[in-house]
Length: 134
Image 1 (cartoon, rainbow, N blue to C red):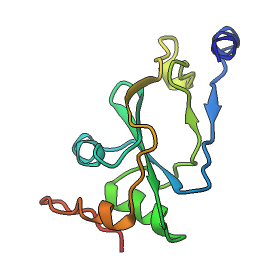
Image 2 (cartoon, one colour):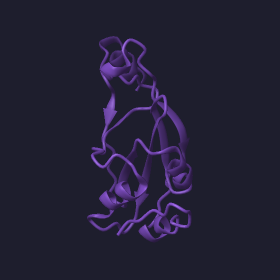
Image 3 (cartoon, helix red, strand yellow):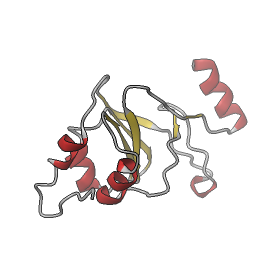
């Protein structure tokens, strides 16, 4: 991995992965509003910051219906077009809009092996702005 990171920086390439898992659906919640990120921290297994003010959370959902990921993105206010691919923590985000001061992707939190069910996520709907997945 260190060689990949170094090479990506030298070539000004983004280092991007598309995580997959057989036991749970991995849902990317990109460009989450700050208040929603706070509410979802208890459910996320990974939280990254990809640039100043831009965070993304990853949630592993067991027993996930086919349309649940889209409903989760919509209900949480995340980017509905998130592709499921992400920049690697420690790599540089080489989007043109950040030039010449490209930000480094940072790992904010990680909880390996954390998975949740749709019901556990729906239980987060207690606040004044409920998360609606249906």
